[in-house]
Each structure stands twice: as structure tokens, then as C-alpha cells.
Amino acid sequence: MEVDMVSGSQAAHDLTLWGLFMAADIVVKAVMLLLVVMSVWTWAQILEKSFRLRRLRRRADGFEEEFWSGVSLDDLHARLGEDPREPTAAIFTAGMKEWAHATQRNLTATGAMRAGLQQRIDRVMSVTIGREMAILERGMTGLATVGSSAPFIGLFGTVWGIMNAFTSIAAAANTSLAVVAPGIAEALFATALGLFAAIPASAAYNKYSNDLHKYAERLEGFAAEFSTILSRYLEERG
Image 1: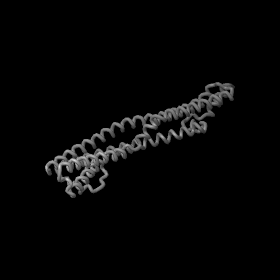
Image 2: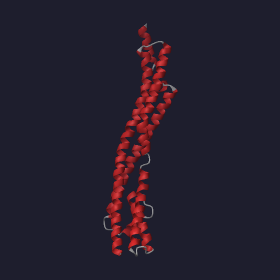
Image 3: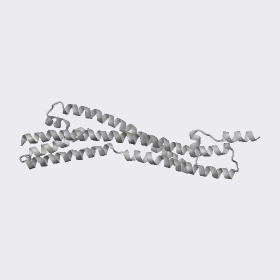
Image 4: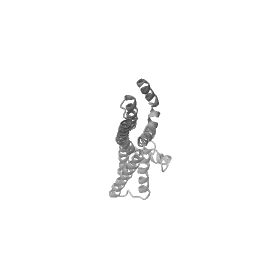
């Protein structure tokens, strides 16, 4: 008779993931749903940044190849237009705009004017780098937040679920495994979801932080080389 009661108790509990979710307390359900949303958002960010960085590297390679091919800077500037979408080209365009503005108004007549122009060119390219990197870094704070907070959110759901499980066990006055296990499993499911959200977010944050740092160095390197070229032109004009 006792065996039949235990078997019936086990059959009454659905230990699948969906069953654990449906049997959980409303607070634990809210925690689980929040963690699922955080996980989906994390993977969306991972895919978006992966495709974007790959595309930007490919476009940067194409632009730099054209830039160093010996084409006239004025012709390249005219072909790119006033608002190129590729960050390296945007840096080039920002510098060329300042250069064209100064040369059209004959603001390179004296050494002081040429030095001022060089500083302005460097400044506008630096501002452009900052603006482009700010666009690329969108979502990084969110990844860091998910990576650091998701385990604690999951742990909160687990603690809450275990408290409810023990309360139910005390009320039922039955400590058999068939009664204890489902409540503990429901609670631990929240921790599992927290780790499922946090681990990819932390890994992605570390990877893309490194990738973005390298990309920023590439932009700064191009800006420095382009600034050197314009500086040489200014010296030749002097």
C-alpha cells in the first residue's frame, strides 16, 4: 500500500522542464521568465555583434586597400560622399572635410595656421572614433549586467522555491523523497536558468570587449597614419 502511495505521488509530479515551471510558485515563475528573456536578449546581442564585427572588418579591409592603392585623396573623398557608414571611411571623411574647409579658405598660409589645422584634423578624427566606438559598444553594459546579475537572480528564485518547498513539506507532514524532490527540483531549475543566461553573457562580454579594443586600436592606427600624410602635405605647402 505504501509503495502504491509513493508511485502515485511520483506520477502526480511532472518533472519535465515545462512541468517544473508550471508547478513553481508565482515568484519563481517570474524569476524564470526574467532569466529566459535575459538569455534570449544575450544571444541576440551575441549574434548581432558577431555579424557586425565581421562585416566591419571586411569593409575596413576593402577601404584600406583602396586608400593605400595610390588613388587621389580628393577623388576618394568625393566617391565616399559626406556620410559613409564604414567607421574607417568616416574617420577619413572627417579629416578630409576639415582639410578641404581650411584649404578652400587659405587657412594654411602661416606655420601657426598649419599647426592649428593639424590639431583640428586630429581632434575631429578622434571625435569620430569615439562616436563610432560608442555605437559599436551598445549592449556591452547589458551583457556585463546579465553576466553578473543572472546567477543571483536565479539564486533568489532557488531560495524562494526551497522556502516554499519546505513549508509545503511541513504542512504535509511527509518527508518522503517523492514529496521533497519535486519542490527542490523546481527551485534548482531557477539557478540553472540563471547560469544558462550568465555564462554566455560573461563569455561574450570578455570576447567582444577584446575584439572592440583591437578594432579601436585599428581605427586609431589609421587615423595616426592619415594624420601623418596630411601633415606631410602641409609641410610641402609651407
